[in-house]
Amino acid sequence: MGTKRKLQMKTKVCGLKFTSNIEALAKLPIDYMGFIFYPKSSRYVGEELDVFCLKNIPKGIKKIGVFVNEDLDIIMFKAKKYGLNGIQLHGEESLQICESIKRNGLEVIKAFQIDEEFDFEKLAAYRSSADYFLFDTKSKQYGGSGKKFNWGILKQYKGKTPFFLSGGIGADDVKDIKEFKHEQLYALDLNSAFEDVPAQKNKNKLARFLKEIKMTTKNKYAVDERGYYGQFGGAFIPELLRANVDELRENYLKIINSKQFQTDYHRLLNNYVGRPTPLTKVENLSKQYGTNIYLKREDLTHTGAHKINNTIGQILIAKYMGKKRIIAETGAGQHGVATATVCALFGLECVVYMGALDVQRQAPNVARMKMLGAKVIPAVSGNQTLKDATNEAIRDWIANPESFYLIGSVVGPHPYPDLVTRLQSIISKEIRKQLQEETGNLNPDYVIACVGGGSNAAGAFYHYLNEEKVQLIAVEASGLGVNSGETAATITIGDVGFIHGSKTMLMQDEDGQITEPYSISAGLDYPGVGPLHAHLAVSGRVSYISATDQEALDAAKLLAQSEGIIPALESAHALAALDKIKFKKEDVVVVNLSGRGDKDMETYMKAFA
Ligand SMILES: O=C(O)c1ccccc1NCC(=O)[C@H](O)[C@H](O)COP(=O)(O)O
Image 1 (cartoon, rainbow, N blue to C red):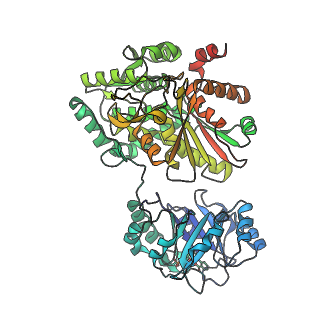
Image 2: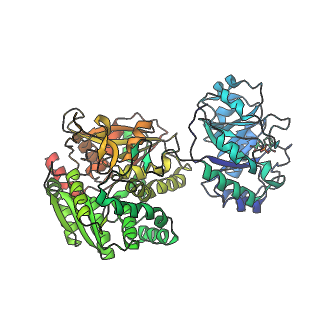
Image 3: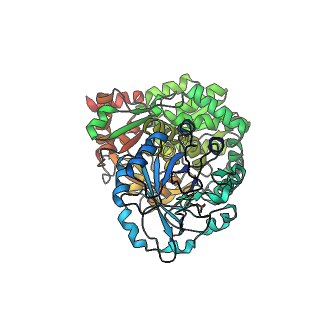
């Protein structure tokens, strides 16, 4: 028995048939609805199930047909008629039936009746044909018995297929559920304990239970109360900044969860930023790689990169907190432009620090910031890139503590990494919805994003972190090569240390001195990475790979010439990963195209000359 809790535990409400009840429950935060197609059950849908009502169930709720030893033809007929997403099998169904259902594109949940004699060895045969198991109480009626079994028996289950816990689960079981720990526990199956009469569920009772369960299940990738992701994070700041950081920490959640913030933020995202951004299936690239590639088009936002999702949110917070002056750092200039833009919109003074080298290589963005009314101050220390700009911005903040430091990535002292992650999470929230509309499935097989500090990746991964089946790939910039000494592949070659107020992974020498990063991409040459990423790397949830300058340039050219889209150099690193992974024909791959390439034209022209 493992100690880890599967996160955001899913819930299935089973045994529904009445239209008004289905419509009412569709408003609850549940993940599955089950319909019993077994004529001997008191919940048998019979002729009462309303096709129109089922077709209108929100896409986020999967419709599962429950059968007992039924013919395949009948199962498939019902699946088509009612638009079912999956089939739950409660009898002695063969492996072949499971496989045929799966081949028809439906999820398979194979139920087993558990008692002390149950032989867990027999589950191995179903490993590839069942997406999930469902462990229910042994009963003559095959299910819906209302009786619990001894969950301790499940200690014997050591397989990898996730399971639904089922059998008589009711409102009084919250504590037991909280205490029950199993690595593969995926969902709770709720049925007769929430019924007024067979098949008629009590909405209020269910709503109360769901709320309590939600409060007891913890997200292992979320920041804790002290600002840590596992061992990483915290707030290591000079005493002079303590009051500012505490002020933000005490207010940020209150503000972003407020109705006013949510209204203002989403209004601006929709009407000013241009969200939702499209999820474009790129057919030519898909053909080339023999799979299904989608680009999340953050390049199409106002200002041309994902950075604006964050600046729009932080400027609202600054405004609510009565701040008048904004400080920011920038690498590629995208965050600088996004900050200058929102400062112009809200009439606030804006000072942007930018490495002197980046001022040169990102000249168009410097011009944009200036035109928007921002003061751009070149940082001339170190190798004159993002790290040095951040140092200068923090110095300014210490000297002007009444200012608001608008950080551009998931870096810095707590609460910035969490704040920026939440603001960027709109990216994966949209991907889920758009994918579901496009493919009928919320989850892709892969999400790929580039990582400098890590904000676009944090946003693109956020809603998939607990969906362990989705492979998350982060691509760092390895410059001239991981071991060339000219690299920014922080996680690949870095070590645990402290940078810009947080404990994380960074590139450093034996004495703990931060080493100078290098990448052709100004947005990725940062020697550290957000603490969330350090935690995701150490926990193994995300795979961190790297791409060289040349690989990124090649990927940018390929996208430009096969799809007519010029990516930012940062995003080109994410695209370079397509060459490094062996995809299956049926895979769905989402690449977060974090920004557009206009700002990089000079670098591209030089490289391709
Ligand atoms: O619910 C039924 O009547 C039923 C009959 C035959 C096969 C399966 C059935 N239900 C399937 C389920 O997924 C139930 O939720 C599961 O058996 C648990 O039910 P309960 O013990 O009432 O919580």
